[in-house]
Image (cartoon, rainbow, N blue to C red; front, side, top):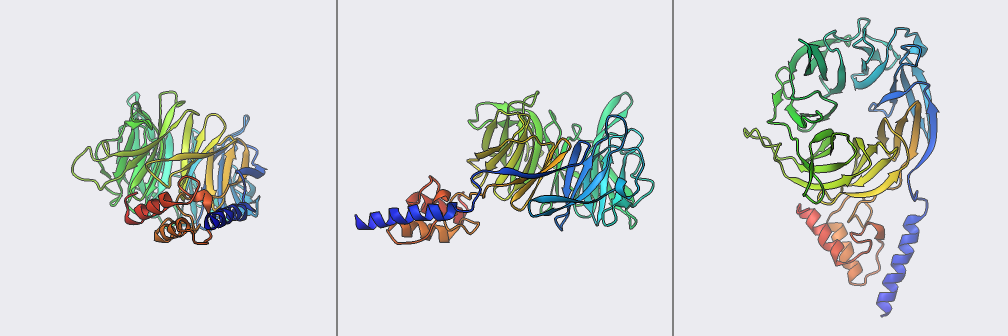
Length: 415
């Protein structure tokens, strides 16, 4: 009895210790007004933030801003128009490569611009290659640039993805083009596999191998079925996706994109079977009734923007059991995660959200991973030994044999 009382006392003390100085929930800590609606946010390898803006009601005066985070405050460094840019433009998506910003435009007379990010001036006077009209997505694999959208041809809109190699002056040199099943609305590049994923609405999610950017290899048929958490219903419309290690985290919904699901798909190695990805095993799912818009991943958390002016924070440390851990009340057109902060584009405001501490289920020694050390620690608690643990990271909010088994399963790859 004395031993049990001692363990309970230690656990209560530990909860108080770990709760001190930690945000109980995520909260907006600052904002900066960029005047026009913010379309996209990009972050370079040094943590410098870039934001593109649309035009105002009476002028095509879109801009690209360069900012930095100082504590909880965003500080404006410079912008294209602040450095003399006067062309009529409305900027949308942006990708960064070799110190240059490749920025798409929705202005009918401009495909986009190439900006020197060190000086925030135009690097290539003629802009981008003229064939990329009506572009929607842009990304890079660290060497090449990929741009996609839908071009009007013969009275109908034809989807496209084109690959380019940047020349020494930043100009884009065309390499190849492919015609996907649908207009790409979102894009994600997975570096370690060299896979380019496209969310194409009702055409599903397509995957392409970019090992040779001059001849993109289609990795089978697109996936267009994403099951609800109980497996009894499904959605066909692909909204967005990210891919990391062996999983694709896909956001899908109904035609109106109100009901949807975060579907976690096990990504096996491709084969000559054209259905390898289309019918790959969906290992987990989280139903979403808030109108999913797009998502980003950081660590064990997936952040999902919704139509209900909120961002859902989902714990995916257990891919088979994704769990909603927080809802942040903020409207978002885009966001990026920088360490423990979320940089959110909300109309014309760029807002800084301080994130609540990340919970890693099973990480009871709080070292950022679940391994054998956590299993040993859980067994020590069970045996009555006086040890320090993070109780809130327990599988069931407590520490016992369940946590020991969970940690062992994670260690040997059974979870």
